[in-house]
Length: 163
Image 1 (cartoon, rainbow, N blue to C red):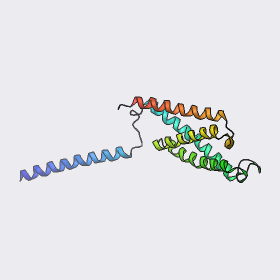
Image 2 (image 1 turned 90 degrees about the vertical axis):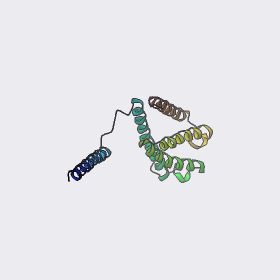
Image 3 (image 1 turned 45 degrees about the vertical axis):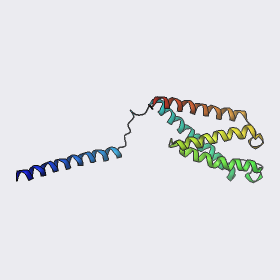
Image 4 (image 1 turned 180 degrees about the horizontal axis):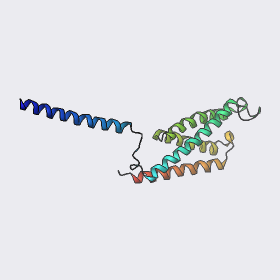
């Protein structure tokens, strides 16, 4: 009889430990606190930069949609009065800027790729097709500066993480 009670006590003890461990794991999984010790300073700066770029992408995307819908500009500047190349570029940027903004805000790798696509696309349109948006070198310079800032921050954040 004592052998059976010893086995039952051991089994109950093991079940209690498993229940305690499972409860601790589930509480940790739903905890709203993040482990800030894992994040480095450069990673936090990179995420902040991505969030700022997300806000700028939202503004740029909404501006392009305002051009498409006619909320900005006069009768002469209406979307349907513009050349086909301008219309295609405007619709492209209206869509891709907002998609990039979502990915940047979430700090996902695809968001950075889509944003880099928008930056390079705008620079190429400004440099190689000046008839579409006017060929502003200021826009190209700002895009190049943002690209360089992103690459520098990403490189510094990657250096802080062990391989």
